[in-house]
Image (tube, rainbow, N blue to C red; front, side, top):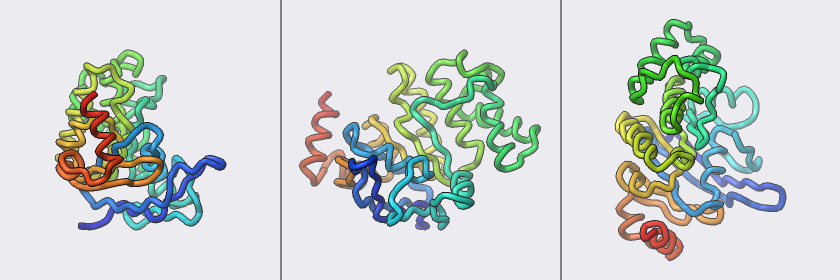
Length: 245
């Protein structure tokens, strides 16, 4: 299996507070990895470092498809290959749904407008909201906005998709529709790294589950290993708390 994301000795601090401590992680092409753990454990910071939305120490090394993640020309190359779906959607409010999806391929990849529009409509069909193409984000429910955000990330045909707690800002009844789209995506062979509180989704969809606490990877394994037979006491206590909730 080819390694698509390689992370070595990843340290990240905010002033005197160290958020990540020497993280080592390799993600294989086509792998679906779910990152779980308590709030403040460094999960979101970890994935935000992959496309340099967060800076990190000079001694740390991250590569995406063999390209080192550093400031400068490499970064545009990396970001063209890494799609990101945020918890707060981050759509452009002044653009229609269709234009939100078209803009990056046109600007970054030089896709002609006609082709970008055709592809955007295909992606809206794929996430199940074809009829919303000409609306503006504020006219959509949270679940619909998040599905637009997923379509927008897919428009760049990324090698890797990062999801930063994509359902945490949604009303409970909208969580399912977004997770359904992500389940279908997971079956298409795209590499996905998902920070999530949705344990059922992680158990069902992930190839590998990573449990983080206090800026470290405490334990990693298959969903069966992590959920049914965790080795570490910290993992056990976390799962007891969230699964008996």
